[in-house]
Length: 220
Image (tube, rainbow, N blue to C red; front, side, top):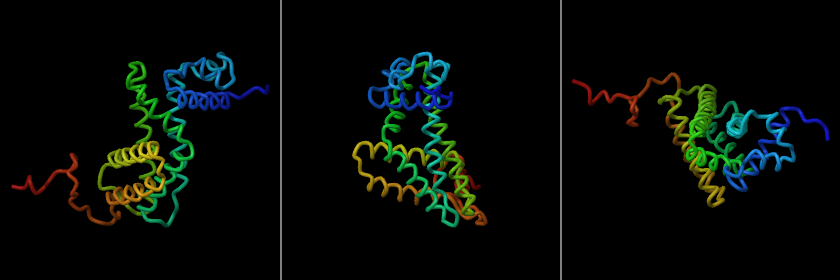
């Protein structure tokens, strides 16, 4: 057998871990089960990763990166902000539909981590990674379309992540991709409404956001 590079070895182990978790859950994803699935020796695992926890973190980064790449590749110059957001969400959804096991694995990993004290930080890292990826997409889309966000970028990113979670879970439950696309149209309209052209004076935001002071109520 040809000698594998460290990068190829890590990738093969990550894909094997995905398959084990998708089929049997995180608790079954022992290092021995993963190397057996990958057709490698136990020594190969420790050559690629220092620990199972390190592999789990890499697993999360791997999925987030793939989704972010798909979303960023959807950006097109000359479109309005709503279209850019819709295209990004559709690109994300296409990744989910093409390989639902990856998303099932991420949800399973988060639930398992929340119940496991030594992995309790993983869900926070997972959703921080989601928000960072979405923030980059929102920032780029706004800049390319001459728009600015009316709320802090991280808050808008949280809304998008909440919507993508709902779209993903609904599709995993019922498999209705057409319904998912309709929700994406609504989500794109809702998110785009939180931005304005850069040269437009900032209006009083109707949303009762904790960072926005109601000047009318505080007026003497």
